[in-house]
Figure 1 (cartoon, protein in one colour):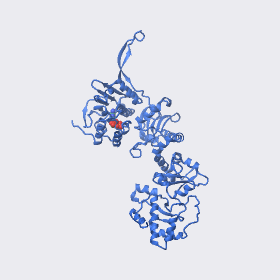
Figure 2: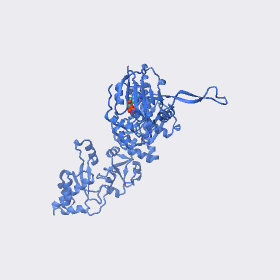
Figure 3: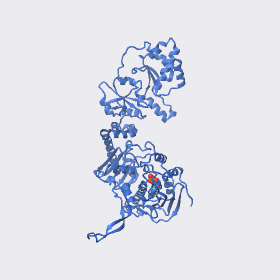
Figure 4: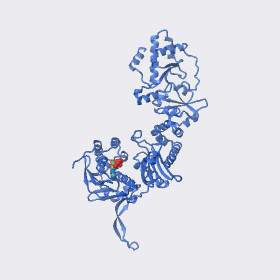
Amino acid sequence: MSKKQFKSESKRLLDLMINSIYTHKEIFLRELISNASDAIDKLCFISLTDDKVGLSRSDFKINIASDRDSRILTIEDNGIGMDKDDLDKNLGTIASSGSYRFKQEMEKNDDVDIIGQFGVGFYSAFMVADKVEVLTKKYGADSAYKWTSTGADGYTVVEAEKDSVGTIVTLHIKEDTENEHYSEFLEQYRISELIKKYSDYIRYPIIMDMTRSKVKEGTENSEKPEYETVTEAETLNSMVPIWQRPRKDVSDEEYEKFYHEKFSAFDKPAKIITTSVEGVVTYKALLYIPSKAPFDYYTKEFKKGLQLYSSGVLIMDNCEELLPDHFRFVRGVVDSQDFSLNISREVLQHDHQLKTIATALEKKIKNELSSLLKKDRETYESFYNEFARQLKYGIVSDYGMHKDNLKDLLMFNSSNSDKLTTLSEYVDRMTEEQKYIYFATGESVTGISKLPQAEQVLSKGFEILYCTQDIDEFTLQSLMSYKDKQFRNIDSDDLGIEPEDNGDEVENSDEVLKFVRDTLGDRVSEVVASKKLVSHPVCMTAKGGVSFEMEKYFNAMQPEAGMKAQRCLELNMNHDAVKAMAELIGEDDDKARKYAEIFYNQALLIAGLQIENPSDYADLVCSLM
Ligand code: ADP
């Protein structure tokens, strides 16, 4: 019998578990029960179409037993079980990409419950046990196997005897130490308390022998009733799924607890949505809008979808069809008796009732978000800070078909205040004189607010939306207008603002522009007299459809494409520095060319673009000092 090593990542994690000073050690029980329940879900599902399982819905259960003398706690289920490969795969490796992050979190944070969210639940057994055995037989297999491990030094798997399908997890509970009282996990009352606390909603009975003192039969009515100690198997959980209970009977804490356990989340949900519909389709749904994005949210690992139940039986774990992409952050369950229990995934995808539910849920989510925005702005903003990008993708995607649905949920920074604003609030603040909704793009709010081309718009008292996410510009382009007001990038030529005429321009304007153009060659596509600069001498704006932000965005995605926005250098013909250059032309062209170079590089810097050769530029500036 050879001992196998855990994969290195798993090994490190195990070490951490074993030596953990984690205060929530008790959650190990919840994790093992939830694994048992998942395993039963799987077999229960198979039993719907396969008579050979030989069990009906009411036969499925989880048995807990504890023995104080031998310090053994067992958790037994009659679920799907595991074969040899499963044991290696599931209990020998930690596949989850989250394990490294888990480790970091665990090292720095001892008091939040973070085990569930990283898919490392089984290993939590090692927080309380110095040896763990898993005796298991998979449905359909001939042999049973026993997996044994005393921790980080590896594990063994041997063939074993087990008649019925399912799994028995045996924990050899650690001896008590000065600081840790592991024996509590062998006490009936403590165990039953933990089950009530964490696993009450589990839909299969969790059964344990409970010893209670009872009045002896026949002595109830006598003056001196006699007592006896009786040990009986009791179901410790109430089994009613939380989404089946009326909202008024469930506290927010219970809903949150369910959210944390079921969806491995750790944030406080921004909004809990319950809905119960009777009609063409009858269903109940319990949905959560997170306030924090899971760490893998913006990666391929993240799976959208709601859990789909039919009369309390899980028929699909991640039903993607129930959620549109733009609301893929929503977690929750839908339970409808209208689905046949053995509906296949393929059929379900095209199911008319499913579509009806999905449409209704989308509307519901949208309305709940709108009302959150109106009634609890702070919570909405904390949600929005995490998922803005998702909503914006929603507007841009599918040829803009969702934009009307989503546009009122958008928020932006703006020149109005340091708070986020909605588009509707922006439009309400617009004066009659203001034609467009102005926006500017850049990496940071401070950077954008200092752009020279913002000055004119701001000096008119017009507000500018500050777009700092790469997707922002696409979003506004896709929207085109809001309440009949068009969006306008402050880079544009036509800002709908009459330039102030201060009559003090350089006289040889055309000559100056040509001179600068000749000096810079094809580094710029145009040099023009600016209509929007006020106190700054120059700025660089993008001509044509591609802005500098898009240039940066596309080049980050596809560097080889070499996407380049057309650079247009705008000169402020009223500015003293430009005038100084104008006077040099014809007198000292060399020096005038140096001025032109400096203007060009300044404009690049202000626009957040790289200057071609920083040290040449520095030398150039010095040569004029
Ligand atoms: P998670 O449950 O998040 O996937 P765990 O570490 O708790 O992570 O469990 C790893 C895997 O081991 C499970 O996904 C499941 O496939 C398998 N497993 C654990 N316990 C059982 C059980 N009682 N019956 C069948 N399979 C189990």
